[in-house]
Amino acid sequence: MKYTLITVAAMASCLALNATAQSPAVSAVAPSASAVPAGPAKIAVISFQEAVAQTNDFQRRFADLQKKYDPKRQQIKTLSDEITGLQKELQAQSATLSDAERASKAKLLDDKQKELKRSGEDAQADFQQDMQQTFSAVAGKFAETMNAYAVEHGFSLVLDNGNQQLPVVLYSNPSVDISRAIIEAYNVKSGIPAPTPAAGAPGARGTAPARTPAAPKPTGAH
Image: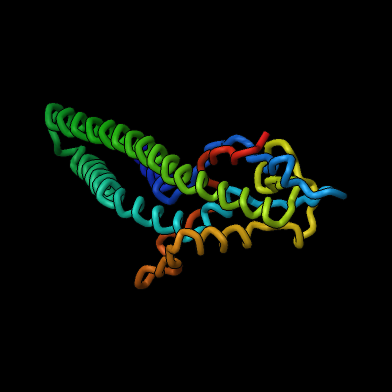
């Protein structure tokens, strides 16, 4: 039963996108020397990973990814239910079963628990890989939009205040946070509409968490 709880919890966590993978710092955007305005440096901040996850493009791709793994999620749930049923059956019939029957049922239960553990681990690994590729595909294009915006608005430096690795942004005035502006610019550029919430769901199916897999380093970052 220990394997059952651990594996199902891990799969549920994975398919809910509670990804905990650490990502490299998306530290800064440095426009070309000719584009840097004279005078004091103009600095902006962005929550890069969170912003990528809020784009319509990522939301749509994430919703498609969830649909892709629906059959696997159901398969694991069915197997988990079978194991629960076998455990209850073995406990209820323990006194009336022969040693051979008890050993046979115990082996069947053990085999299914191992299958559940293996299936959960494989599904988690596959999902994480797909999620990484999905995020990276959007993050690369998002970084291009961010770089263009920084150059257009004369920013000398853009720091990621959503990443706990260096550089650490201890304080930033909300007025210099360009996260929403870049999200909106990217949505306009991609032409992808906002996702529609699934019927009966509390929110859009594609809603993603703040933390996401590793993002590619924007062009010009150091």
